[in-house]
Image (cartoon, rainbow, N blue to C red; front, side, top):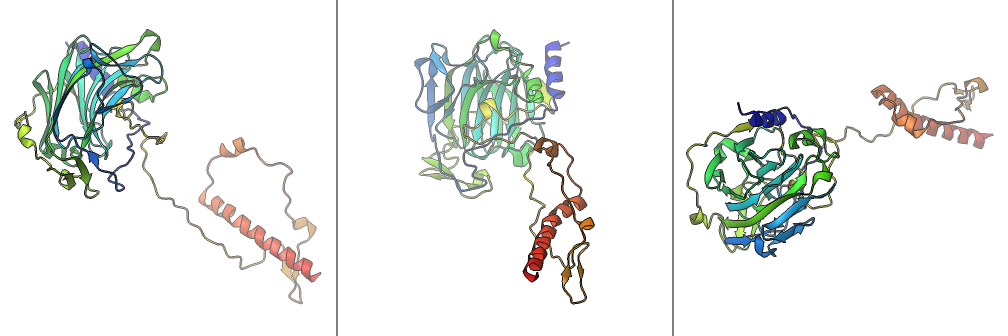
Length: 399
């Protein structure tokens, strides 16, 4: 019996996680016109044991040594990462990584686009035997049945090469040259990632006690910062862009790869560099992940100042309120016309009086929402008061 795998599967499948954060971009081209994405347009190799590269933006405090770039979680709030200044439009990426140990610690290598397409490698520090793969299209998290777990023993003890090969027809994930998963565009449908991607690598604490319970459960439990620091290493990275040019632009708001244009180059213009041929069928995965999400935070987050909603799911809804002016066609209760058609005020017994104190704000917000009828009464009250004031003003003018 493979008890460690059983533990991973139970932890993942039992987590019908309620995620309180989503990915957002500085400019989503499905919603507005955005600046072009700078293109990689070629093949590059980065040896991070020689220090940082100007092609990557550091976030947090990654450091460099003979093992490459080090991402460490030492205290609450630490979530260091690097992200590329370039994008690829289909391509091949090889990460040489040693992952971070630790309960609740998550090491990530991510391809992510401005319109929230995403291809992931994810390692949970609570388990040294497996790795997760996942993908998202246009930020859609309507279901979490896209993830898979794969054998990856000793990922915290030694460096391994993790590959993503991404074309218009398939995505292939490999570990040390061995294919562990294949996703075809046909099987993924509208959720297939197909827009220009940047690269992100980093570590974060999914087990931070401030995170949603579902996220903590998915990450394997709460993080004990006193037992850290927890460090992930990226020794090197090789990237090949399967398209050419200086930049990539969304020609419309469809998000399809056919809508992407290249300045000074061609989409799929470097497809001859593809290093993995079409795979007819996917190899069996170690386990599927039917309900546990890859939370959109940590390495997945965008570095904008956008404040995400605190509820899930966040579905904007149009307001049902409309502005209107109520018409008063009759006199308020107790008011009458005299024989000379003059308005007569009510007697003292019918005058409404108000208490000397108003309910506190905290008490008022604790009450249940009013019914529709009660709400209508509340809306009509100011109108009635306005009519009352107008009538009183008229009487004072008469007398």
